[in-house]
Structure formats: C-alpha cells, structure tokens
Length: 230
Ligand SMILES: [Zn+2]
Ligand SMILES: [Zn+2]
Image (cartoon, rainbow, N blue to C red; front, side, top):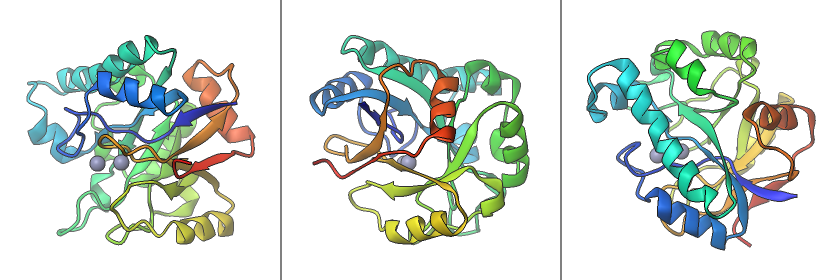
C-alpha cells in the first residue's frame, strides 16, 4: 500500500495556500507519500475577486494549472497526482461565515470542470445529483470545525473524519460519530496549507493511477486512514 494525501492547497489557489509545487513535491517525497489529490478551494469569492483572469473558462484553466504544476514536480519524485476540489456551495454560507460548508470532491476531470462552470452556485443536493451522474464523490470536509455548518447526510458520499490542520478546532471525534450514524464513508486528509502541514491521508493500493480508479477504490473498500504524521 502507498500513502495518499487527500486534502491539499497550493500557493496561488487561495490566500491561505503557502507552498509552491516544487516545495510540496519535495516535502511529500521526504514524508514517504506516493500520491496526492490537489484540492484547492473552489468558491465564489475566489473566482469573483482573487483569480484575475477575465472569463470563467480562463479562471478554470488557471485553477487546473495549479494542479498541473504539482503534477509536473511530483512526477520527478514518482508521486502520482490527482485533480480534486474543496468546493463551497455559496448558498450554504452565512452572512458572517464563508466558507461555512465545504466538500472534498474526487474523480473530477478537466472536461467536467470546463463543461460545468460555477459549481459554487449549485445547492448541495444539485451537486450530489450532478456528481452521481459523473462518477464524482463529495465528502464534507471538517464538518464539525467550530465555525462550520453541517450538510445534509443524504447528499454526500462521505465525511472527512480526520482533518489534520494543525491550528483549527476540527472536533474530529464528532465527525467520526456522524459518519458512523449515517453510514457514510470516512476519509482523512492533512488540509495541507504550508510547510510542516502533513498529517493525514489514506492508504491506497499501488496500482491506482486514474481518477476513476481512485473513486472506485474509495467507494468499494474499507479505507485505512493516516492520522497524524507518525
Ligand atoms: Zn484553506
Ligand atoms: Zn482545506
């Protein structure tokens, strides 16, 4: 089995991402990881004011280029890289909290993103139905982080039961109980934003190379989670 990061942000994707792709490649190589899913924030406020490209398609192109950069540098270290999202449905935000609810999405293709613009405008249920048709899975990230809003368990494929962010109050034990209660798949991710931030992920068989293989594996197997950096 190999170690796979399920939750990672890069510099340029959002205000919070601090590490360059070449730094990420080196750090994950040193930590013994062989796979990473890039899950930059996908939210309305970033698309409206942080990304400077003119059209929505150009913004998607830029968003994907961040993943491609990680893929390029990680390739030199034999680390496989997948495209994912950390998606914030805008309607779930409150006047004071944004992002209030976010979903880690796996199985996302470049074509899918270009042909389904402004995903942040859809409701949780609409996203779930769209993803079901496209073999994409959505799992709520850190649902019990102190400022977060809990999504409807009927319209998600799973929950991030372990979020390794070093400074946020994630209440991971509550996420675990929530997943158990609703029979939802549990995953783990570092929520990597900066150097020293590796502390989560899942174990994968070595032969998973395509996004759909990643999705199928997550759907049909009991996952072994990485919790902490030991
Ligand atoms: Zn972030
Ligand atoms: Zn995150």
